[in-house]
Image: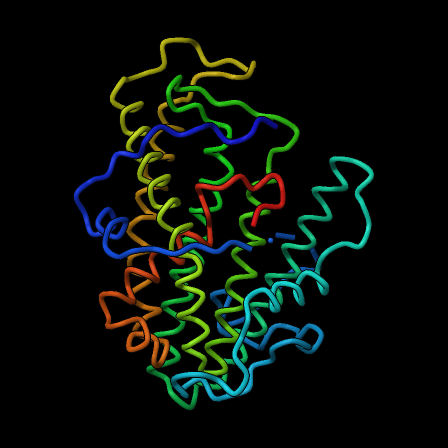
Amino acid sequence: MSSPRAAAAPRLRTSSLALILLAFPVACKRSPPTEGAPPGTSAASGAVGAPAAPGPASAATPPTAAAGDAGAARTALDFAAVARELDARCASKREPQSNLEGKEMAAATMECMRRAFTADLDAVLLPLRDADKARFDALMREQALWNKVEDDACWLAEEAAWVDFSAGTRDDGTARGTLLVACKTDAARERDFYARALAAGDATSMNRRFEERDAAGTASIGRVIFMRVEAHKLLARGAPDAAIGFAYPRPLTNPERSELESRARAVEDRVDELAQATCANFPGLEALAGGAARCRVHATRYYFAEFDLAGDFSGGRR
């Protein structure tokens, strides 16, 4: 598989999202991706039902406090420790013997990570269904937004890696699907950290994670804007000059160009809405971030970093 295409300087539209690129100084820190079984039907996955089957007990940082307790939890969460625990639980301990086996192992890791965050988030959501219906509904709406963002953003991570926007062509290869799975794996790891912080009422650790991902999020915002603008320019060219065949690279069809633009726009719009929901729903987070506006900026960057469309997913990034 060829690595993701080098992007030209992103063109920024005058919008709230573009301004987030410039709103406040940023700091950066990076970290790793990685395997298990499909998640059960649950509140976190979008359908209210019985909790997903629990995985092994969290050795490093189990949820400890009620979700409504703002401020620092009894034991501060550390993202690197959570990631190491999830990797130990979900990652394969052997090397794949073929490309197909490698893909299957990566998909198993992804499903294990998704089951982990689903179970940890259900531990917060399900007790609220009867005890605090308004909060339950607000968190369910937030999670539904996250699910939509993950779907669009990880689709873009995969598709855009095969697209040459300057030439208006797309490639393909045996590595297809690798970036989609890696994106969803990384997103699940981050969502599990969020679920544990929410369960522990640990706004301090969540805000610290926002700060750690600021610079990576800024880069990812620029990449999404670039993809949307370039896809729109390709659409403005009209139909591809060459006939569409089966040989690669081949011209992008107009429906493909349109989907790239619409998915990028959907990510921009939904991440902004998701960031606002997270800041409003996580007790103590807005105060620690310096107010609702600053929290929204940092949460937006955090979610863009979570799906890291500026990165190369093929080499175990972070």
